[in-house]
Image (cartoon, rainbow, N blue to C red; front, top):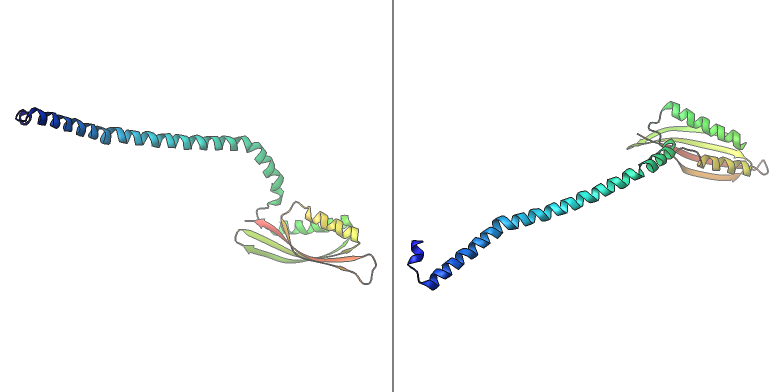
Length: 176
């Protein structure tokens, strides 16, 4: 204060005004601006958490429908390819051939492992009437198994009229 006493009134007013402006600047930059930034960050975080909560609520609402869908698709997803599941698959193919009244010759080629997928490859020679063969193919594609058809050849049997032959290579897929 002694230094201000030696100043003229205009200089004193200017020094007080400068001190007030610097005090306001310090108050704004050290207190108000960090609080303002923190408030904005909290609002953004609350908005983000609110959106996540809405998404989780929506998913929880869809839970029963997703569970029903999973149950309907679970028969397609077998977890491991074992000898028993291979035998069961071959028995299912033979059952389809009896139902469609076609002759079936099975040639299993074994299991191929790729990343997380096992592929059990089977070559099928199917012979019968056109209606029976198409019925067999429809039933094969409608099986509750995850399969892919690698090759399919249709031809007529020269020794029999109204008889067709199909040669298929199918792969039954299983997840590991």
